[in-house]
Image 1 (cartoon, each protein chain N blue to C red):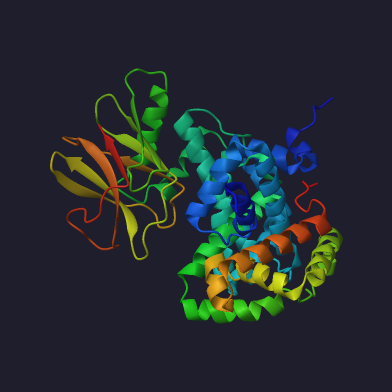
Image 2 (image 1 turned 30 degrees about the vertical axis):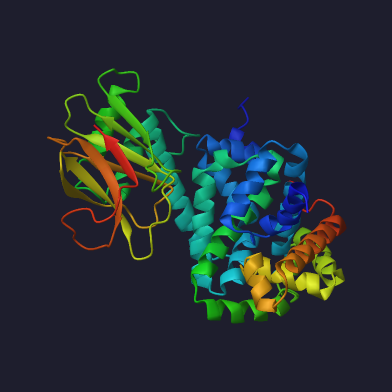
Length: 235
Length: 197
């Protein structure tokens, strides 16, 4: 069987979710440079997706919509605050002050009682202010798809760390922020469980901090990281 | 004269346009996408996991991924619905694969029959019912051995290697049945991933 025949044989398994991750990666990489193969894969994925239409249809509970939209609107507020611009259409009463009220829900980590104020200060500085230092990094080899960005106030009094696209932590573990001072690390608290696609945390004490790091830890008090970092941002 | 509110235009937009707005951080566009696809997404999640609470968690996870990673949508790879259901399916299968292998196997084998059940609520949505009818007919027209491997893969979350072991068949046979079955289904359904509306 030729390579191409072998790939064609794999397409249906990929479309049905029945291929191994390495097989999926191989097919998708080839499809990037082969429009015919890409179209074939898209058609098979559509056929596989149609199987979902044949399952007994069940209405989701209204609470799912409410919870989801609450989180989405909170996210939109955070994005708007971080970008210093309004994200999307303004909602009734959705001015800057009301957006800031959404922050405490995100700020349940890292001793971040002053997160709203910190966000306010950083947004006042603006992206163009040379005083606000931005450090952006990709995830470590433990999390190659992740990215992180720290925006640090010029006086070093605080920073906002945003992290995107972390992988799901291993079962029984949760992501924890560490404030690294040389060879020492102190905990900055846990990121909210399940918030791996996007998280924003604030650090209000950067005295002596040389880096911010995130590791997957058991959800108990630990005095030092026990796992390799998934993100490490030098300051 | 009061200018028209751009919000009023949202329901007229195609899914692909809504995704573009979601990428720009528009929660109203996202809400509309949810309303259009939540039912089929939840139904798929419930069918995969068999538990309402688990299904809710999966759908919330999938839609949040849509919200936060909408830039990853590529029209060339299919419709928004195909993309969205793909996210639900992939994440659902990941969860299935974390379950005990024995329990998964039993549920998947039982699930092969369940895929042919009629929904008492499906008539509420005439368009969905027509599509479901096409899919059901397509599945019914497949040779049973092809329908079996497709159901084990899609609803059971098994890899083709696992299906070969489960059915005690050569891997090549399983791959061939998948390919023949899915290509046949695709031909029978035309373009099932056509964009909404």
